[in-house]
Length: 199
Image (cartoon, rainbow, N blue to C red):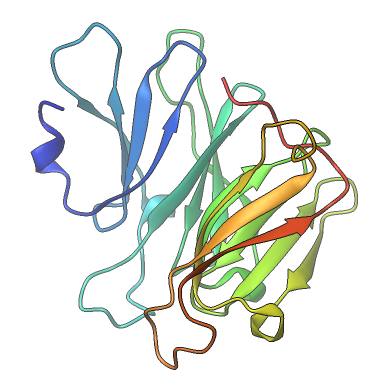
């Protein structure tokens, strides 16, 4: 896609209901939009809340990472800060004011994120090898699975969309950060609630 070569570290991708493509840039702390019908992408938002702080010591900051939409807002995980940032999408398609949705030490290393129909957030931590759930009702963060369950640097997470899989999470083992334990794999876990339907 035109101008995509300008991204420093394109990481996660999401598509909204009108077909626009959004991509996080982990190093730049930003989100780009590649809108339908336009020849080139554009920087959609760059914000201090999306910037990494160097905590992973990779030599570059790793900030904006996982991305998901829910009820008119975009949510972006910040890997090194251990947070998820909410960005309202305004009626004209532009970003509103970014704000911290949740921040917690258990979210350090957060990568992929997704939501269920009850607006609960699910996230995987690539650094801590955990699957987590943030319950929107009581604002609690719960660890659902760990390395003892076979997680090994999980990176991406999504709900199934087919018959019999809508209440099932699927997630990847990145399996690259030492010590490598379980190795590369695709894992699954039933959570009892369907995921938010894709656009």
